Image (cartoon, rainbow, N blue to C red; front, side):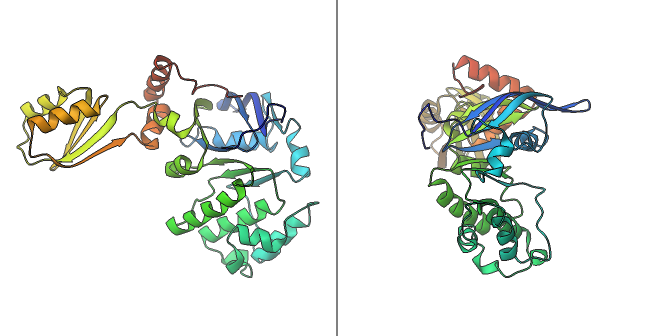
Length: 326
């Protein structure tokens, strides 16, 4: 993660941001500061308020309360200066243009754009440059949108579900090009449902639920919300209620799951639990011990009562995951 001096204005500052649609509150009092050079993943279930937050930050929607600034100025000023690029879900390209023509059209609206060839190369679109937009596959369309978004050579990029409709190879290619973009110290905020992407590529995770920020920290900090480790092993012994009760008595064990001949334990003291398990059952084999994943943290933080439980866990561990990280 790139660090910037305190004298440098933040790329994004949201203060008391609130947006309602009739009786529905989409964004509920968000305070969020993102420094220049950060790569931030915005996570949350459908309806969490991610896309609305991006729209408010870009000035595409007006808040009912609070303010949104980019580089300490009005969002539209930063956009007009070419400092901001956006790849949004609803972003449409003219269907009769080729990819190259679509990029050239946007480049003409900016003072200091990249060359069309460079934008196409960075977005891995060179091989589809002459294809009409109407003939692109879903993954190709996303890459074309990315080329359009970066041609202004922005300092800040918003990406809303950037790899939707991409296959695994295309997603890998996209993030390779994004690495090149962020290595130059650019700021990126991306919303995604692919939690592995957030874990792998973000410096910081901002998790939303019910229009509010429920966690804000590094990927490691967010995953640490769910304590303990998972022990997975194959076994050859007979499964009985007595054996299951015995497994629950292992040190720190909070859950026991069995599927066929594979046993999964979640324990707050995995080392002691594993030693005792092996002492009692010599026929256990193919053992794996893993930390909890971003999926586990996501469910703990955003799934109704689990959200409240996770906040209680955070308070108990005296972390600073919830709230503004200015």
